[in-house]
Length: 234
Image (cartoon, rainbow, N blue to C red):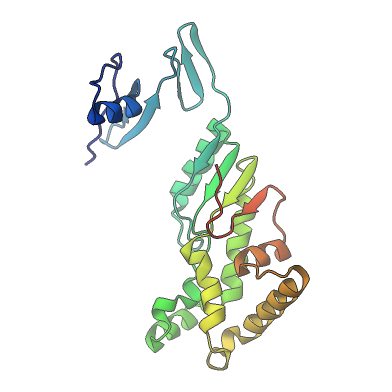
C-alpha cells in the first residue's frame, strides 16, 4: 500500500500568512504517472512541470509543441548497495534505467556491507564460526568484491559518487578495534592495510578512509569520486 498526493494543476493563490508562504514555496504544477501490471504490481513516478508546462517522464520530454528526447538525467541515486547481499533483479532493472535516462552522476551509499567482521557480531563466537564455515570471514575478499562492483557501477554513468556511509566506515572501525591475535584469518590483511594507512598519512599528513584507499590501490575508474565524511555534493 502506498498513499501519495498528486501535486497541483492550479494557479498558485495563497494567503499572505505564514501557512500561505509555506504553501507558495512548495507549490508545484505536477502529477503522478502510475503504471499497473496485469498482476496488480504498480510503479509510481513523480512528475514536476516547468513554468511553461513542459515536463519529463523517464526518457521523454513533453512540451506544448510535442514530444522530444529528454536530456540526460543529472543524477540517479541507488538504494544502499551492500555488495554480496544485492537483489539481482533490482540491479538488472537499475542498469536498464541508467541506460534509459543516461544519468550524468550515479550516487551510491553503503557499497561495502562489511559482513565479514560486522561489529554487531564481534563478541559472538557462533556467528564468527558460521561465517568461517561459509567462507565469508575474509575482510580482504569482501573489500575486493565491493571494489569490483564499483568498477561495474561506474560504467552506468559519466561520474560515480560514493557517499561516506556507516557500513563503509565499519572497515575503519574494525581496524581500530580488532585484535589481530584473535583473528588469524584476517591478520595479514589487517597489518597490510595499517601499513598502507601509515604510508599515506606520512605522505599527505592526513588519514585516508580505508575503503577509498583500497579502491584506489586496486584500481577504479577516474570517474569515481569518494566523498569524505561531511563533504557535500550538489
